[in-house]
Image (cartoon, rainbow, N blue to C red; front, side):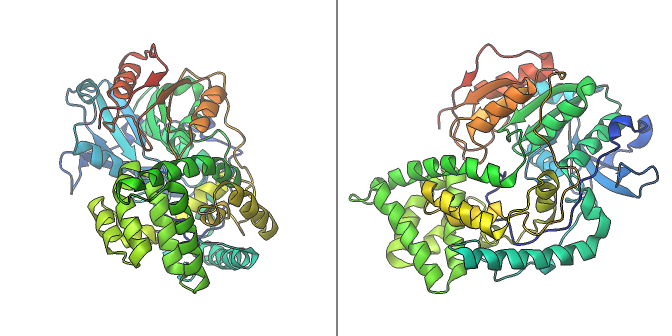
Length: 480
């Protein structure tokens, strides 16, 4: 359910999501609020900052700083701006714009007409960031095989919650999606735009849906690519994603006969389960976690999965991990990525601000049983994900199901084989917000302007430039 398959480390923070007085009623930021300068490390980009209230419910709230950058339109003055979010939660919009500036993936008509604007959501990157990595436990395995493992995981998480809350205090109570959407409207105002054009990838689609719900009159052309569900409960989303994960797992394992004549997917699946269990039983939880993360990464990134089958077979036969490591490095991943070295404070702050549920050990044990009925290999790590909000204080204003009938028609993109955000979520979101759904046959996660489908890019281009909806509801992938 995330844009990256990295494990959710056992860390959390106290959060109370408050929005009794929203930015819908806030005074507009002055038009000249943004002062753009050439970015130090990226002279082809422009950077700025914007002050926004930490707590929108208070008239005299302390302010925080949002980091913003833009890739200027090739033809100035620009027709307008397109705000982008890469997902997560926890992804950097500024990093996304930096990456886009180095490719030709954006159609020329879009580049000519629009400034592409990125921002780091509050708590992330260059937007008054939070970091509780010093409190994370090195011994917290995500391979939760039984009640005792679940209870130990929960107890360690609770301790980290308190330490992180002591460090950041009330700021951690203001990092939920509703506040991020308020910030987005403040950015719109500061950009002097009458309406907001926005591309939200993966979790960013939740921001798009919320913006459409709360700001229908200033909603422009919004694209939800690889959409999240309109509901926000972590347990529900984890359970709903598991069948798609399992389906993609077997699609990957079915390729093993290309590397070993007698190999079949069922046998390889059982070997992986046996290996993970034997590692855990031998007290090698770190390697069990690593194996699980490699498999999850391969499921969510099918192109990587194509190359990992051979190294996985070698590892199961010889315990030699080196071929896996080489393959991961070729695709830009390293062991730190898999072991959750990146701080997840803001990720969990958002998830648990949006979700009111706080699962108990009993509920997680029951979930383990249900998950095992779907996937023996992925159940244990999925329970760790479902436990993300264990020990967190009650959210005062969790997100209800996103729904609107007053907003303009948005464009919702689903990947037919997407294991990160299953197709059903895009279908449900499109139904809830009155969006136009397009299902794409590309492999992997997001699709718009990622060079996986010319059909998708043409649809997005026409929608952004002309507000034109497509004549089709399906797109083929580009030849590989």
